[in-house]
Image 1 (cartoon, rainbow, N blue to C red):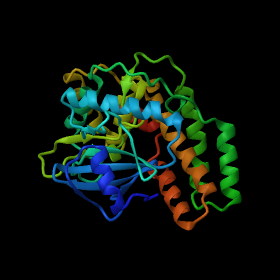
Image 2: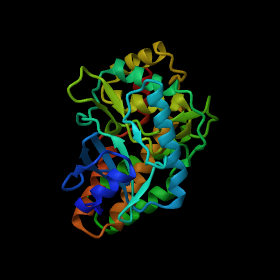
Image 3: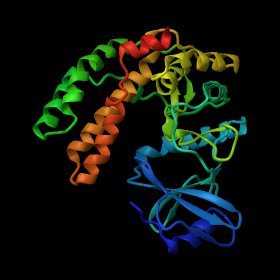
Length: 318
């Protein structure tokens, strides 16, 4: 990672028509699971340059669809970073052999699961009301079980390699498997959803009075808005269930089409969080450095430290 450098500035500015000149940050200002973010300042403003790591052709439809949904959300009045298309109208450009995308820069506060519940409800409703017919379909990441057999295999491998979190994970496996009984119902409705509205991707805009910005539309695609609303309840009310009816009420008042009313509505967060934990374990086992292992252990602990259980779901529905 980190392939961009000062020599890339001229090509970046020209490719995305960003002005006459610019200054690129000395290194990435943020790193995600799939790419690194650099800051570029030009005479036309400040920009977030996303350097894609290991981009493959199979990723392109989802990334392009996400960019189109992001543009539609912005046009509908949702606060999102503007997508900056290249001078040729493309979402991507290749700079020094590196695929990159560019977005308008937004100063954002750190992740916070205690964001104003009314603002959260209104934001999700606004996203679900965006008039957008996307082409990215459903994905098993948000609906399919991991399964008892796979969890047993993972725990066995982790124990062989003395993973420091294996006991905690093994203790949770029966609950993970039990929750999979809630998967499999036909969605009430399908529309293009963000599908990744965790606190990392919904932030307060710096120096504003609580205004929220949503970003990283890379996983957008068809989903049940009721299930995405349930995922939002898990993230922003899971540790304080009294916030759940406030989020639901604000969402409904703002015209949101979804309703999180029954345990099966929580299929998306059940499946998604299980797959995130599974992937973190897989990457921990494949890691070759202490830093990589620590990074992936932190990913798994995001679930272990605040697990989704049937009791949590019941509290959010109470």
